[in-house]
Length: 351
Image 1 (cartoon, one colour):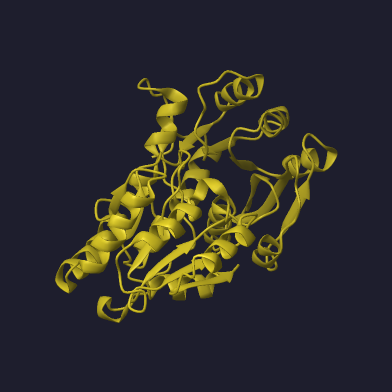
Image 2 (cartoon, rainbow, N blue to C red; image 1 turned 90 degrees about the vertical axis):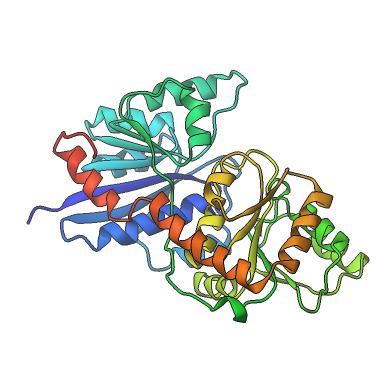
């Protein structure tokens, strides 16, 4: 059997995040197909610094870190039969076309309205793609407006989703997982939790993850004497899944046009409903069973925490079951990618 060589390419700051989780899930799924060989290529961006979180997640992977438009990047693309690029990096697209390799683009980031040469080059690069997939309708609209390009489509990104299930009656508290940076809304969540009129013994808040704001947030928790809040730092996938599936609610409160919201998808796969902000593509990820407020509004978020705490067991159990069932209809199955790569290699449209 002839094996096709798939190269998954992603820009990288050095930390583990949603894009990294996505390409690891795709790599794992395609690697199980006997007709594919898979490699990962991380293109270092300005300010790159390898974080232990990413190093941990890559310990069993075949991967390479490369510089932009360098010899290693060119050699790696030349090796491949098909390139699946995350976002529309012009150097990767140009090299792939120079070596006559088909290019698949998954666009993860929304297109800002302000003009710049960088964004113009991204738009030009996207037009050279053999397949163009957007992770949310929100992102799709910012790139193409209401006149959709032929061959482009929405394909929500995913990760290594777990089918685990904890009975609703056995779950407790709220969970946050993500990078501790300003746009993820963690400061707003801590403020909302402090304002919420809830029993903190019954409704604890678990904060997982790491980032530049960790020291500031932990100092604020101590200053306010907030009981019921626990921080863990970075956790591996097994620990994250265990803690998420045992939570009553996963809180995802970003405030700067979140492109999609992979954390919400991961929570829903476990049957855990979300408390989210109406931010960018996050309502698509959070689904119809999510509780929702405006971004950056601590009082409104506190109201949602109170609403969640007062919800009856019957209503909560129904939301938990529905959020998982509805997710199944919203996502492409993970074997979509191998099938799509085969169709592209044969010169066929992706179905």
